[in-house]
Structure formats: structure tokens, C-alpha cells
Image (tube, rainbow, N blue to C red; front, side, top):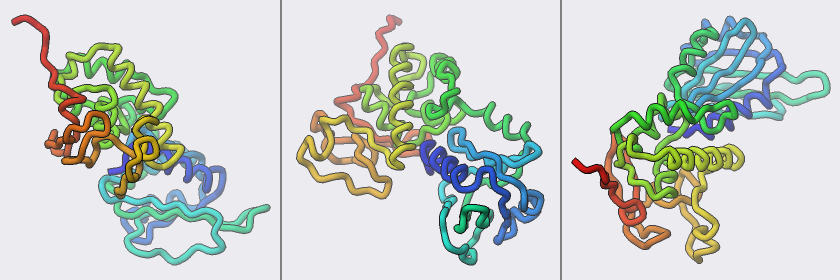
Amino acid sequence: MPEGHTLHRLAGAVRDAFAGHAVRVASPQGRFADSAALLDGQVLQDAEAWGKHLFVEFPGDRFVHVHLGLYGKFDVHDGVAEVPEPVGQVRLRLVRPPAVGRDTWAYADLRGATACELFTREQRDAVVDRSGPDPIRPDADPDRAWERIRRSRAPIGGLLMDQSVLAGVGNVYRAEVLFRHRIDPMRPGNTLRRGQWQAIWADLVELMAEGVRTGRIDTVRPEHTPEAMGRPPRRDDHGGEVYVYRRHGQACLVCGSTVRTTELQGRNLFWCARCQPRFRSRAVG
């Protein structure tokens, strides 16, 4: 499932290609046809992401809400000479015709998304209210997440993936930020110190902003890059250089121990037992 930086990059691509223009809206597949007819010919006003949700705004406080889920793709093409016929199950198609001073087209095709629905502002706000703070957004409040974490006995590795606690963090960022801060993924949230949470948040803000900029997840520090270590670059469909994610059975880049994996709340979790030692409470029973 795409992580939050992917949705923010997508929102930027939609804004750049369509914002301020009257657009053609269609549903070649048919599942969004009635809503598409209401929006067809309207000016697309904005696009924004909150965690793993995308909202495309139209006049009258109407929003196309998209959640890509595991298999969704929203491909944006700008500056093309012509718009091809739809291929496959295109649930939503946006088209920007040429305008004054511009002789090219733009189009975007959505396929395979978990959600594509027309929302009112109240429905959009309800999704946002159910979501935790998004580290990529400048208006995010990390204290909202901290209040949930400090009261929970659940493992911090699970809390970071709970979108109602923290929006946009997925399996990669979860594993990597805990490694970078030497925190046992199974450590109960209520045992973290506030300073530890603040450091995790600040790191996520920086890492995820870089993901928006580059389109890939890179989490290794300068001294652990392939160039610095004289090792081959990582080859993986997710791209980027990482410490533990999908490195099960390989040597830790920091200590040389074997990276481990287990399942937590239905998702694979990766960690280094030496760099992230098991948490033991100092409380006296």
C-alpha cells in the first residue's frame, strides 16, 4: 500500500496539471459515472492529501475522495499531444483540454482504488477528524498522536501504523524510524518518554518530506550509504536505501547481526534485535 509521501506527490501532480482549469470528468468503467456527470466541465480547484487519503476539490464544497488501497494507481500525464482511449478498468478519468497559451493536453486515470467517491465537505472533514496527524502537513499537531501513544499498552510498532494515531506512516517508515531510534517495535507505547516521541516525529517529518521530493524512501544515514560502505545498492521494487525493511536474513548495516522479521497486526515487521534490544520495564512490582 502506498505510504503518505506517495499521496502528497500525487496531490501535487493533480494540482499542477488541473487546478484552475475546467476539466472533463468521466468514468469509463462506469462505477463513478453518476458523480462524474455532476463534476464534468467544472473547474478543479485543488487537490490535497491527508495521510493515505486524497481529496480533489470542486466547486460547491464537493470533493472526490480517493484511497488507493493495495492495488490502486492514479496516473497523471501532463503536456501530451493527445489523450489516448482508456485502457483497462478506468474508474475515474480527468482531462484538461488545451487552453489559451497552451497547446497540450493533460489527463489522469484512476484504476483499482479501494475508494473513489464524491464527498461533501462534512464527509471530507469526518475522514480527517478520524485520522491522526500527518507528518508531511505543516498544520499537523504531533501532540494528538502523543496523547494516544502515551496512554496505550499496544506495541509502538503497531501504533505507528494505526492511521487514527498517525496518518501516512506505512510499513517501511514504521520499521525504519524505529530502527533509527533504536526502539524495540514491541515496546508498549505508554513506556515511551515524551522526548523519544518528539525525536521520532521530527525524524518522520524530515524523512517523509524527502520522500515527497524524491519519490522514494531513503532512510540510511550518510555513513551507511552504498558509496560510504562500498556495498552494492539495494535492488527492490520499493526503491531507496533502508536499514531493515525487507532485509530479513541479511546483515544489519550497523552492527552486522541478522535482521529479523515477524508478523504484527497482520503485517510483516522487520528489526535488528541487537540495535533495537528488547524493552524491559524498570518498574518494581
